Image (cartoon, rainbow, N blue to C red; front, side):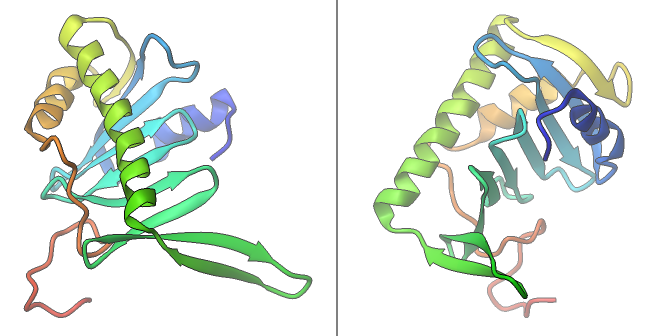
Length: 170
């Protein structure tokens, strides 16, 4: 996603899968943070244009976009995908994260979410815009964050909905 203001405006306007979304300004962040919820309650967090963290309905990390890498959940582990272009094609190069790499990514995520939770608890935030208007999303975001375990779980799949281990993938 672009770092321009118009790209952020587009995110708030065009992220229609996030039926409730808010753009917040927090101390210590140069760019606004966008937090949104899908109809099923799954959440997405956009800390400026990078990083982005997406959760499923069980509050498990399912995807992340950090420093031009896509991370996706597979069987409770994280896999990084990097785009490599050649003269004729573009390929996604896959890298399974080591436990240390996973811990580092989760520590950074936890730090961002802790800072957001603290700003919401103390009122040290400004709501720039909400969809729908006057939706009182800061309280909903805070409630969601307070229910998240201290050790953020990783989903089994990058899909939004959780899937029973006995249910085949769609």
